[in-house]
Length: 252
Image 1 (cartoon, rainbow, N blue to C red):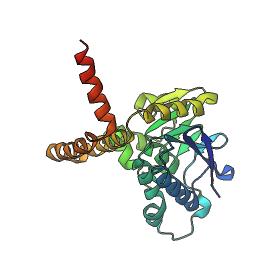
Image 2 (image 1 turned 120 degrees about the vertical axis):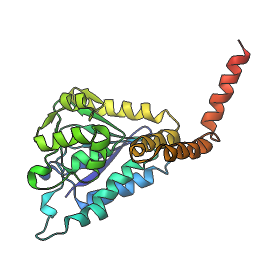
Image 3 (image 1 turned 60 degrees about the vertical axis):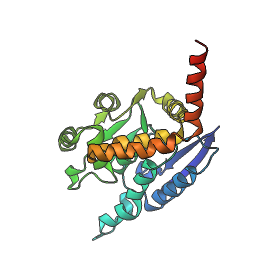
């Protein structure tokens, strides 16, 4: 069974998937633990960000198939556990960065794509072979692949069966940074700190708005922008920036 190991690095939380028998394959119990921890973290004012990684030489190879039973309604797994897991990451008010330290496939790919940024070890491999086993991208993967790659490019990849190297995944836009294997966790921590330097509400809302904009009309986007700017314009971050701007003008 997958356990979620928690460690702290100053004001960051590192969550490590640990299921060595199944290359850190996800279980329902692990998904529930991730959802609960991610939701709690969003309301922890002392926490700046989260790094998600895997134990050993794998990030997450997908669903732990030992949980599958014959005639199982697989959609229930998505509705009750793995869909909410992706949504909890996507809705996080603090940045969640994937430190992809090895194999990343199936639901593991979905998990990484849901994060706000992805740092990959040079030896990491990305697999999207859903169709090859008679299934579709799930766990939110279709949503994120369509937005990161575009629908046509995403479809070309999942029908190709190509197992992407970290460098190839980076060239396609699936990965933000590629580093030497021993540096992946530290670089992911640095990326989480970089994202955490922004106003957390502004950063999280900008992330979701950019993902959602493709499915909205221009008037809908502008109205959502207006509502968010109303809220953000009343926050201390903007007031300080505005006051600093006018103070600088007065000194010229």
